[in-house]
Length: 319
Image (cartoon, rainbow, N blue to C red; front, side):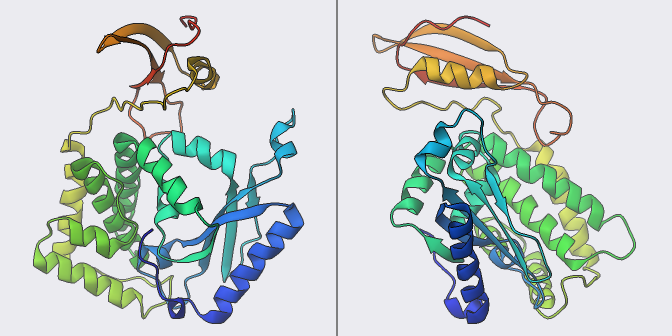
């Protein structure tokens, strides 16, 4: 479990209010919250004094809800105000996102600010995330966000300081994912610590964080031209990083290929190919799923193959 921020960094009355809200959600929706954390700028390490509190959580319902023929809503959201933004995902939704290598979910489990932790949940879920980690998904997610924020920050005119920091964090996260192949840390300073950065640039990044800590969330600021040029070059260089587009995910022993086939064929714009391979005298079925992202998913490459090696099961129909 990552190091946690000391409670005094979240005002006690705010922490108490969020914990009380989580309890109210459990009572009103008949759910159990397994994991509740802070997301957004406070967890990323560059809050303003008036930054709102972005509480996120994962919850589970009673068994009968999951057995229902008609699927229910798998998100709980509270009305957003100037102080609180509270929402959460059902565990099944989280598991499905995990299977796809969702970067946001990975960040939730790495947050340094925790409001609720069901015993054993964090370690078990992180183990699943580590197993299902998709280097390419992480890279494409952060690269897309970095390109959008960098373009907005350098478009001219008045630019909010937080956009510069968003661009810096996601740029370094994309580089981390591409060069290290592991999940990028959530906090900007941790990313900067783990990537080779010129000391002058690093001092300017630290200065931006310190400046934002004393300004309103909506404040604009001018960054050093040297830093702006460095960020533009670094974001542009992301396209030169080699990230293997085929990311094998090996299923656990005993997973039925028919279940995997059911998942794959339920996804839009997918195509299956099954083949037999031999490994040390043991036969396996290999399912290759080609994703063809529809419009609106520009953060993904045009198409890619994902391979799943599973133990022998009923022969799957070729699609």
